[in-house]
Length: 132
Image (cartoon, rainbow, N blue to C red; front, side):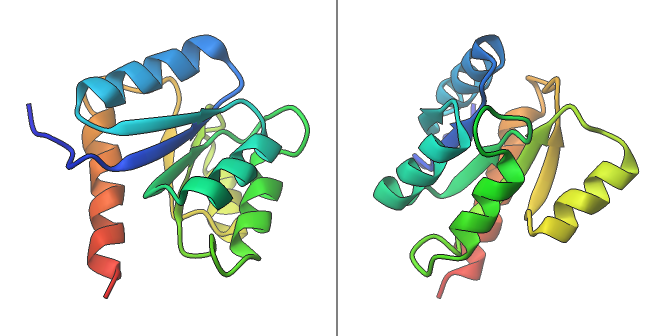
């Protein structure tokens, strides 16, 4: 098992089973995790903790994932955080919409538990290389 270097990942997911699966897989792989069940909670946690990566569900109670993304991108302190859409919307038009909205990547649900840690790690590595 490759250690993830303790990257802090904010998982934004309103489905408890999906949240638990993502959290457990990431923690087993050496990541530190934060959890939010709403877009508002995600924005607040990102402001407080500045995670290395946010995995953002799109369909959320309250503000949706795209609105939360827009709020985070609008603030200098959170604008540079990599945010990846984590959603069951898998049509190419959906992916185009997510990238057009400003997401840095896309991971489809249900997650593949074998590939998921490497997918997340790859996004974290992009963050590290992009920083001075």
